[in-house]
Length: 347
Image (tube, rainbow, N blue to C red):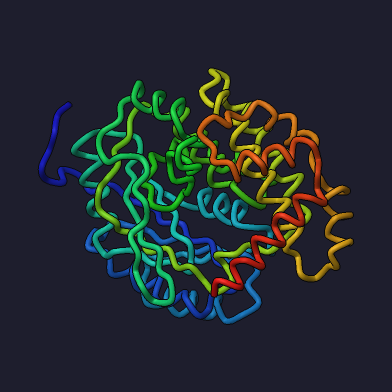
């Protein structure tokens, strides 16, 4: 590996920003981009049918900085907006930044430097969770360093989707915090089409399945803003079908079977989360929640989860697994209710 200490080239980097109703956060995001130390960038803003003042803010910035191009579309979701931006981008290297987040002014310069040093297809950095203005370093996943194709395959097979000791995925499943070689981006975005949740994780799996090398940086350079109400996702019945499609796509991509041992545990974790969402949906009565679980419960996800490895699970998690597999929804709902009650009493 030929390591270079200086930037020998300054390739064009396209930064794609999907935008939807983020007027409160947008200026900070755009300021962090136009102030980049690395200057050879284009900033592709894609307004996804915003109904607030976001598009006016975009126009103001586009008038001030010729590196900004603004694209508008009817509301079609983040994957569509990213694809639209990608098709209008000219750079050989692609980054995605969410419009309610912001980045270090050094992020592109340091990522390009890492790419040129290690000659890789993708560079990743770490990030901060920004919670009520406080910047909290995220859990580093995977370990920083250089990964050739063999090490990437080992990573996929070990815990890309699920780590039985932590229940975390071994790789952060986000398209932001990455610098991608252009040729890998379109397939990643297409893999996420039709999904309303976890589309980034599908995209990342497609990328890691395809690239020859990557470099993971130690430095946190991206700031993920946790908006009020964002940490607790509200229930949506669409999620059941979403995750059936999610696992179908994973299996279609995973022709070499890297995820075969991880999918059952991940499916069980998703099932538990969906049932919990149903039983904590305060818009419904307790009986309506029970009926909703029975109606929406996915037999496909249950079949995927039946081979979950429960050896490293605690007693509480093993009990949940048993209740889900035996469709003991009423008991599971009571279990969730008692947990909520205990947490409220502790407060």
